[in-house]
Image 1 (cartoon, rainbow, N blue to C red):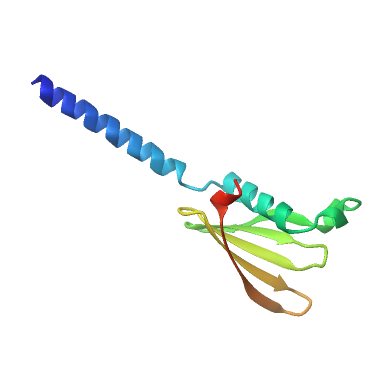
Image 2: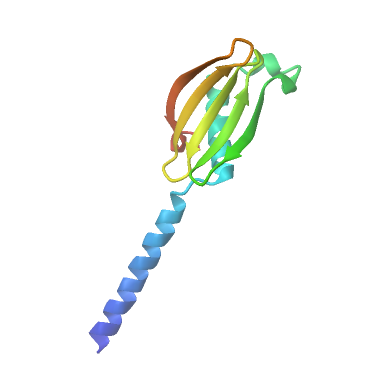
Length: 115
């Protein structure tokens, strides 16, 4: 009887620890914003925005069940859309230049590398 109780207790501990680890791997809206912000600050020259910070922005875009969108606007007017997968952190980037109506895939990053 004691062995059965011990097995049930260990099973419960293992089950609880697995579910808490799964929730740690889920990307939150705040994590998506922070990771993309860190990426943008490391990859793009923000010095041009020192006198006028409004010419370069980063904001949350649309959200679906599986993806957060974060939008970076450069001082040139170009936009980079970051599509952050909520489950994996894999982030697809798409550059868009509105004045020329040109859109290009710009690669991928792992969000966990920037948070």
